[in-house]
Image 1 (cartoon, rainbow, N blue to C red):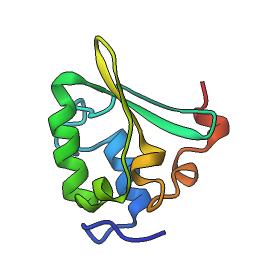
Image 2 (cartoon, helix red, strand yellow):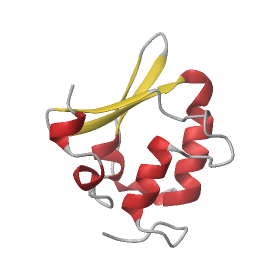
Image 3 (cartoon, rainbow, N blue to C red):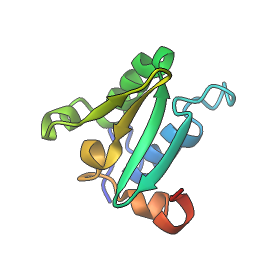
Length: 105
């Protein structure tokens, strides 16, 4: 467990990013869905929110995560699906935040 750029534990920042990114706008979510598929954690982001997602992510975790290794994303008619295990799994213990047995669909 390390600290995010904000000085908060990375796992707490990751949880906030998924569940409540903007405390003053509780209905504005960056991710429409999230779940484990086998051993990888994915988020579904609507096209109109992808820029907000990237801006939020860089503000909280830094752009260095994008340099760590390439991250694959899938594009659907409604969403961009991002493998968060690839993107930030090296810095955040995702399973401690979203346990596989509770968030596998």
